[in-house]
Image (cartoon, rainbow, N blue to C red; front, side, top):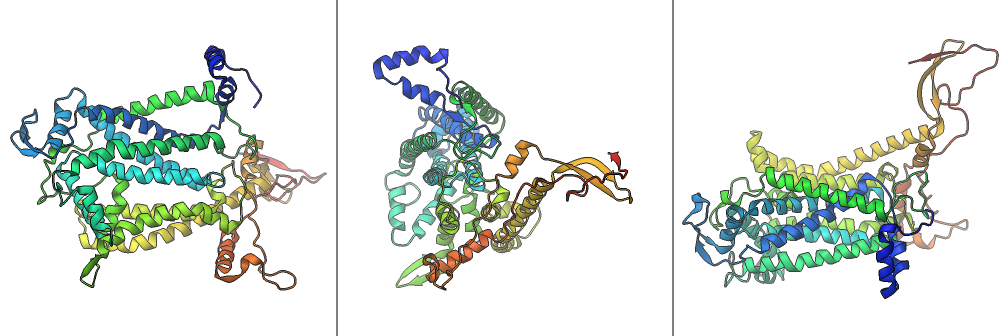
Length: 550
């Protein structure tokens, strides 16, 4: 990008700050910072916008919510619950919903913003994974993103537990069981969180503790992670999709001011408008229909928010396994579903950048993203993880599926028990084959051009289609695929093993590297013609060739 002076709209403020802070150079440099333009980059921005909406609406709700488990009798506007004994937390949530002007709208905007926040983080992380945007030097930001998603799950669980209604109490009872199933420290975690025996604790400490965690501690940590994430991204610059003008050393896009600032301001308003429409017209979490929490009751077809579905599904399909030894019972039927699925998904995602770097030996800086088809192993593993997550998410609604489709509950449970192992393997195989097929298509386009729709007939009556060269922009995208790094030989010319190939870890790395590069399909540009059958047919002088267009 060429050098430019500061816009007139900010020249005065910059001079004002420079006279006092000597900061004009800093502001000039950062106002001209370039941001690549691609629709998928907006996924992360939506997460940021949703978090801002959560902070704004959460502040409004805090002014009227009473985080207390003291008992009271409801006397508000909702007549069906008048005179019913409940906690002050539930009564204040009803008061916000029916008696505070705009309270129900704010409650629903807050809940929808939480859903959008988690969905956009998930989509953003999938985009980062499938394009390889987590590679060096952005591994730290990848880990920060995983931390934000994990904290978002806990924040959402505590948030929809605050009203102390029947549905949220069901989720809290499961949470307590999961905490107590952890060996050695489970009872301490349970007592720390609940303040005593379920549901209230010794002095009604549950809701006040959840309130403190939900409105103060976890949002503060998430805010710090968001700030760190943005600062690191600002310093390292944004990754970019492969284009004709984009290189590893040059960022091509729009400046922060005024283009990006205007666009991001408009996108924030669009996001807020969509969430406000959902809050106004799409009902979510109608707590007045559930009633106050009763440990002896449960809501029919209870379902958590979508991001907690993986835990719900793993609990439902896990067999009733327990181990009793030395007078202690280890509840595997709760411990394994609580720790293993999320441990596989999040733990695997955390170590993946370093595992890929170790397997491929690629320690270069990467500023241009991969196309998912050009990394079939990575894309296949990602789709296997998505399928694993999706099967467990569906399993969390096995009772609803059985009831709606008139199926046996036991049949659906056993189906998901097998599908959770078989479906990810099938997803990996199918995804990898699709990627390789797309690579072959790209190789054909790069070598022989694109179909022109013009049919040629040779003198001997054969028909073929003329191929035209791909555009420069298209060729830049196609040729962005790098040749896979060839596997280093296990021994040199004298038969001496290479240092990194020794031992079990060397063998494992060699096998993984072979699996990573085995099916690589080179995409290269050829210089010969693009006519005829796609293999460089040429017109022969002195012979007649007819052309048929269609």
